[in-house]
Image (cartoon, rainbow, N blue to C red; front, side):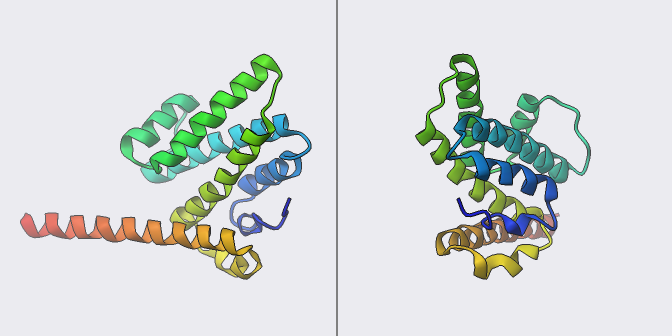
Length: 167
């Protein structure tokens, strides 16, 4: 695997970076561990997104945080669907001790998109220093995430401007 793929997380998001490194190191040779680490990453991601979106700490269990993220629109629905898929696969793997390596590899691809979206939305843009070192496909995902977040912010500003003009 490309161990430099997630380097853009290292300086600003070391907790994410540490988990992602473990996912990368085990996705081929130990897909069960990679699946467990992806579940751990998903839990941390959802908690961070909800806390940053509400500007407060949350002590809810993961399912309630995920519901909050979904109900309030804090995360794209496609991410929540992948998170649910990871949770289901993780539970199944634990119960049956059988891991679908191809499914784990497929789920792993979602991890980069999550992290690209997260740093685009909440980061300080340190990732720009790493764009040249990324594979072209990863660079596109990161830039698309930045554009998606920018579009959402522009749309929100327009809505606020209309509401202020009406009042």
